[in-house]
Image 1 (spheres, one colour):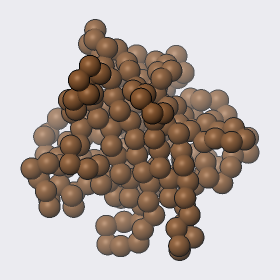
Image 2 (cartoon, rainbow, N blue to C red):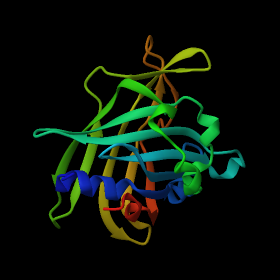
Image 3 (cartoon, one colour):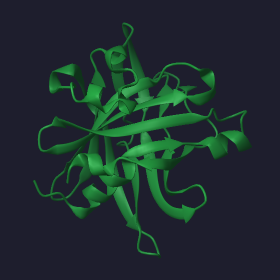
Image 4 (cartoon, rainbow, N blue to C red):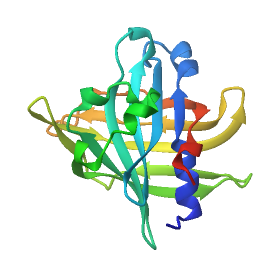
Amino acid sequence: MAFSQNLLNLAHCLAGTFNNQRQASENPTWFVHLKVWQYPVAVFGNNLGLFIEQVSVASGQLPYRQRLIEFREDEEHLWVQYYGLKSPQAFCGAASEPERLAQLTRQDLTDLPDCQLWITPSITLSGETNFKATMRTGQLCSFEYQGERRFVSLGFEVRKSLNSYGQTLLLSQDKGIDPTTGQVLWGPRMGPFELWKQQDFSSQYGL
């Protein structure tokens, strides 16, 4: 299947491990030190996808927030579709154990029909392509968790850079939201998590 250059660039940028060690060290009051894995998976037919999970580095706890994204496009739009897992704990830690991800099938996923991010690319003065991913105005992602309906505001940016911290910066703005009050229940409150790419997994797409 032929993909647009923007889709390929975005998919390649997002595939890898990321952390915000610098941000957490400079401002530990507001930012926990996170490590995020985003590993390519082949569960969406001809479309590219990523399995995502993260861990609080200092906590000693297991990885959490297992989810998947599928890259989609048509003649006018590029977007990512989110999916949950029917049994998240069954794949806990799988992002760093690719042999386990090889067992993942479409039947293991939960559809999240209102969980999409629409992608806006932009070209920098140096010719690099950055990406901004946003939800539709007024939209929240919702899903069932422990018998309750949960709501999340999703969003991220990808910026290309070249410095001692890395070449790709992922700004993550995911937050848990109380839909009645709009109160932020979890997630970054003082700006996005600044996650620098440490390891690249883009070759695992097999393109």
